[in-house]
Amino acid sequence: MANRLLFEKDIIRAVDRHTNDDSKLDDDISCILEEVETATIELPPIILSPKVETKPVQKQRRVLLFENENLDLEQRGNRYYLSLYDKEGKFQREVTIDVKDDYKVGLCNGK
Image (cartoon, rainbow, N blue to C red; front, side):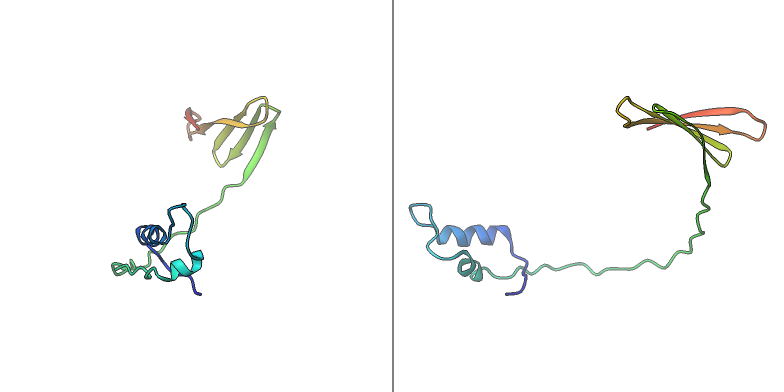
């Protein structure tokens, strides 16, 4: 038998019809499910959007500057990322340090 889509309410109705007073099925479940009609669903038409040209993403090389059991300091381009870990080594938080052209530093807290 091929796979079919069946509505739950139709299955429950069929099983209820074949359940004895002892709460036991009077027939094999596959025979009971053969009585259930295959569900038909009206699906709306699928409209594909026109293909959008995307520019390739420029990958940034990661340079690990410092590492110990509680933190990592990485450089990606002109940004520095400080990753903080707990005592079990699970990641907790990442702090982004953005260095501007005039060497002003901005901090961004992220999780």
